[in-house]
Image (cartoon, rainbow, N blue to C red; front, side, top):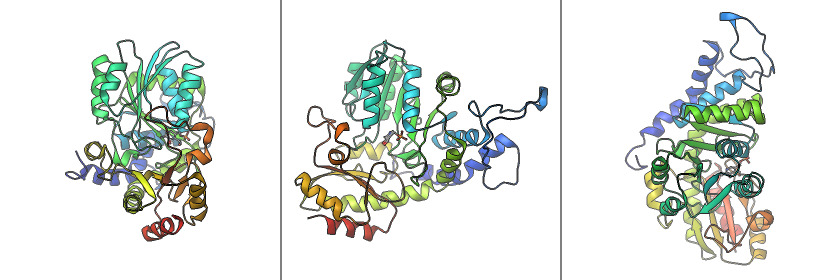
Amino acid sequence: MTRHDDRSRENRFKTLAVGAVENATRHENGRTSDVVPPLHLSTTFEWASGEDGNEHDYSRESNPTRAALEKQLALLEGGEHGLAFASGLAAISTTMLSLVPPGGHLVSSDSIYSGTEKLLTELVAGHFGVDVEFVDARNPENVAAAVDSDTDLIWAESPTNPLMQLCDIRAIADIAQDYDIPFGVDSTFASPYFQAPLELGADIVVHSTTKYLNGHSDSIGGAVITDDDGISEQLAFAQRIGLGNMLSPFDCYLVARGIKTLPARMEHHEENAMAVARLLEGHDRVARVHYPGLESHPQHDLAVEQMSGYSGMLSFEFDGSLTEIEAFVEGLKIFTPGASLGGVESLVEVPSLMIPDEVSHGSTTADIPENLVRLSVGIEDVDDLCGDLRSALP
Ligand code: PLP
């Protein structure tokens, strides 16, 4: 399915996003009169024997509000199992540490969120002695060359933070299948509305729900969705019995609420981001725009093929000094400088100014140029957003 020949997945999704939470709640609780699923804060549930036994006994292991969100997440990604974690990084680290043994082999895209890169280098490799091999995953042949029958996990992000690079999910899934290796995709930037990695053959899809799924910048959380019973059991055991890094009921409630408007928000994010990308592309102080929706993006054809929209994230290379970039950021009135992304409000981040310790420049293709500016384009009025950028650019 491509964006241009079939919008039906998105149409089904719109109805599902609103209704899935009710379906999930009914499934858990039987038919109730709640239109909005109830928030269960109880840490423990009264024990009863036999047929009267309660499905939940202690909220670290299971909780009705979390179970409803997990069902909702699975429905949206078209997967069998959903797990809600305390953060995106909790979802990613639990996946890696559960599926890769100490001393194992993990092949990862070299273009990934800086926190995931730190997790891989410092903890997975540094502490658990895993052989982590980074490759330029834009070319699936690089992945094929790195994996062997002893590889435990293939990891990729698409689109990537902050360079907006893509990987061919179907091609990498085929390689993973040939070797019977699980393949996990961090699909946070696309959201489940614009990309369905499980349909493309991935085994695991991960989201930072902090971003588009919740969408209102008021909850930190993460999700894993998979069709694989064994992977789901391993992760659930690690989460509930081992690490205890599940999402709190209140955060589950917020994410479930956010999901209802995900399709409406994503359409608006994308429309605004496309207008912003075109404006920047035509500006003489912008050297390069990274947005998969632009025909000039080197992987635009792949974006059309595997995504049904391009989301609200983009980055661009400013043709000027860091001092000029700082003045540009200070001149913005609507875009707020700050970390994170995917909320309704527009944000601007300059990695080399704001997170210099997490940025490395110039040694691999995934390194972040010093003049890179990342925008999380919100759902404000598009003319206001473009006007804000126009007046802050020199
Ligand atoms: N994955 C991506 C692509 C991200 O951008 C982020 C955070 O920015 C994460 C994962 C980590 O998510 P969290 O901050 O919820 O732990």
